[in-house]
Image 1 (cartoon, rainbow, N blue to C red):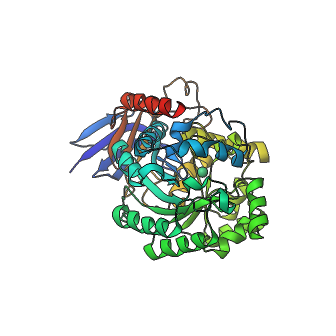
Image 2 (cartoon, rainbow, N blue to C red):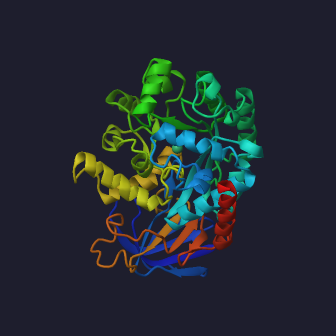
Image 3 (cartoon, rainbow, N blue to C red):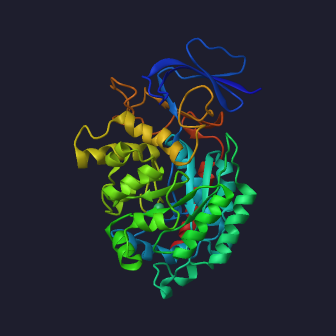
Length: 441
Ligand SMILES: [Zn+2]
């Protein structure tokens, strides 16, 4: 029986209670006890001067893009122009690129307090398969929700991506079945849950959207895609389908408590009501929305209406960073820009990054630091420079720190004293540098 005691920190449980001083006891990957004066015969971690929070949950990412950060071409374009600039680079990716990008991206997330990440892989050139990301996530040690994405409408058929990056729709559905059967684990404490995720309304057909929803429900897995990301996206929907994105989603089976959509910057009041009634989730990606000039998502209105909202860093070609704690701060700041200083506080933004994300991914076993939950815990050193002078440790997002001291996933230490301990990060960064140099050449 593996037991670890984290002793002497400030606990922010995210269960609606105020921060308290205390210890956390972990056994076999589960939080068994919290409170003062706990003991163990197992390992003891000193958390004096630290804030303990639940591990953060990332609800939207394209990890493969980690090898296309700060690409000069299309750097200042809107969404569609930016995608068109990057598609030819992504078309040259191999399984090595995807695996390396996934390890680097998840390592960065881990260092910023994230213990669970989803991923949306929607292009499969040169033999790339979803398991390239699944094995890489197991190497890093994060809880992983990979989604089998897809593009099927190429340029010649009126879609956005080049024809070389689109797949046959029957083959897409067959591969969804293959990866769900091989890798999806629905059990509590699962380290891998697979979802079905056609890329976006502007890169797949109505038929694939509808068939993907039927398949996901048959297999009891979740559905994910991009929706209403910016004004261009809404205009495309109106011109091509004759309706707004919310109606398009509803007609094809893409609403419900097993669905979450990325961005939703342009949801109107009617669509927010639809999402709230149906329990349809949203992955809010504030840094990506800023970087691409997409706008400010109506998160305050969504949360007030009862829409499940989590946070996502989005792919690193549009962020370009992948720090979930920064994303939470940005979510708080953007709502204040649009609605005033009382629009969102630090604790509420942290709620979106923890319990909110857990709910969006359909998990009731993570997101809170209370007995019975899986032992996914971020330890923040409040004696660091960013936090020096802080009166309120629980207001983590107002000051800092921006990196964890330690990180536990399923009770296993992934970050120790600020360093990733599961993979050789230096060697991985050297590998990434070599792969990027080849792509640039
Ligand atoms: Zn995205």
